[in-house]
Amino acid sequence: MSEIAHPPIATRDAWEQARQELLLAEKELTRQRDRVNAARRRLPMVPVENYLFDSDKGEVRFVDLFAGQRQLIIYHFMFGPEWEVGCPVCTGYMNELCDLSPLAKRDTTFAIVAHAPIAKILDHKAKAGIRFPMYSAFGNTFNYDFAMSTPDGGEGQGMSVFFQLDGQVYHTYTTQQRGVEGLTSFDAFLDITPYGRQQDFEDSPAGWPQHPTYG
Image 1 (cartoon, rainbow, N blue to C red):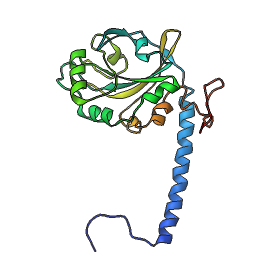
Image 2: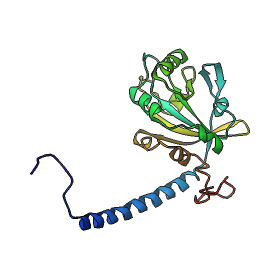
Image 3: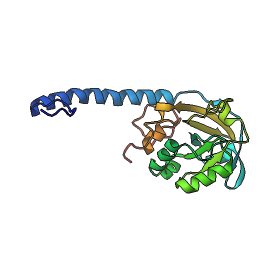
Image 4: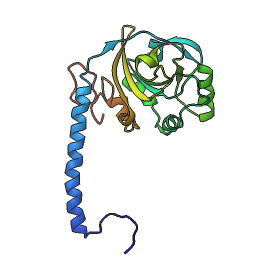
């Protein structure tokens, strides 16, 4: 018998039984995820400062990052002010993401914010082929306020969601570390927003925008 580690060998009938048992757990996981998403859509929101960021077009206000949409998803990209290049893991993650342009059809946009000066960010963006808009928080307290940078030079990564209402920006959600690893698809990104996927199978508050699930 081979010494290579491998799953146990079984008959087809035994495999089918084990698979059906696992399927029950998988279906319960899906239902639990739906319940968690519903609870997330009911989180309150907190007003935040209209920070001034640096972009490839100069200074922009926080509300401008929404690009006219109601919801904004920000990836906190690890790139300290003294670093010469951005985090390779963050870079790989950004380059592996699917096309997120359909988010606009759900009143949502996506952007990247890093702590490094804008010149370094834009240089890294060009060399790494990152296709999403990137902004610098070097001149404000954004990274510190959201615990993505520490006074001793520490840098972290994560995903935050914001909502804008009448020009005021509100913070609705943040996740870090392993909370980010499942965010790789269009639907997963919408799941962390207040409005969710905006499909009628979802348990959402009254008045939330919704469309037919397969419409």
